[in-house]
Length: 163
Image: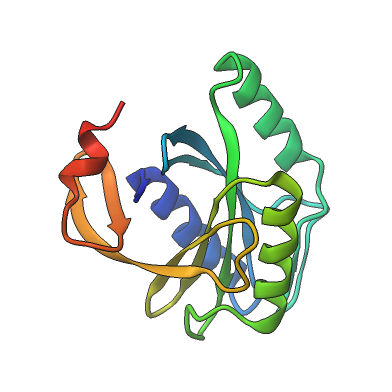
């Protein structure tokens, strides 16, 4: 399962609105709790990033600087757990380029990662594991004070009770 802090969703949604007709994006940072992911930080587009209506190229070193600082402050507990980007005015279905990029990223790190696509109509949350060709699209299971829980089944308590 995946838990996304409300702040992560709010940051991605606000960045999408600010970008207008262009895509926006950033990295997702958080915790790995056994097989579960907990997204706590979403970086926002920065000055050296490049965006068009159909592409977002994360090029600004600020994303890596934020990730490294969070990792240091947490003594290595906060990790790069995924990426987010927007599809302005479109659907939250991943494109061929999205799928190819995700496959490469997960292959490089060798651990499951989450991917978030925010559109004006909906939000898609995807989990991709190493050696898989396609990600699993997760469903919203519950809204808790900690954030929004996504998963395969209706049992949200499993995540909240895991160490």
